[in-house]
Length: 102
Image 1: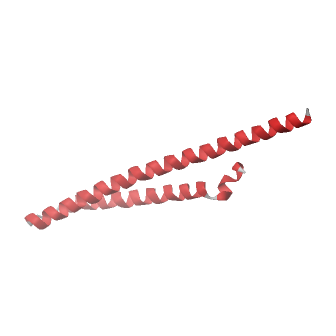
Image 2 (image 1 turned 45 degrees about the vertical axis):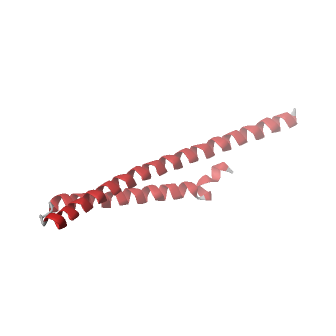
Image 3 (image 1 turned 30 degrees about the vertical axis):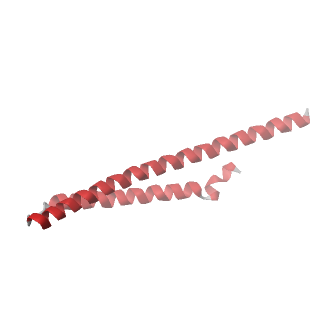
């Protein structure tokens, strides 16, 4: 019975490893998806700023400075959030954070 017990124990460990790696992959996907959403919002804000500046240039009108300031603040906040998500994603990908998978 020793061989079968060892086989079952080894199989159980591999199943646990697969579960742990799967959870890491799911977390990495979620971080990546959230980063894509934040990047998309950032692009939308940059486009909005560009449209305001272009309208100012074309029509010689004064842009709403407060609106531009708020968009710039939001972009800076998005960039900070994206950087934090990237750090979390990098930590997931480092070998020492995945030591339970070995």
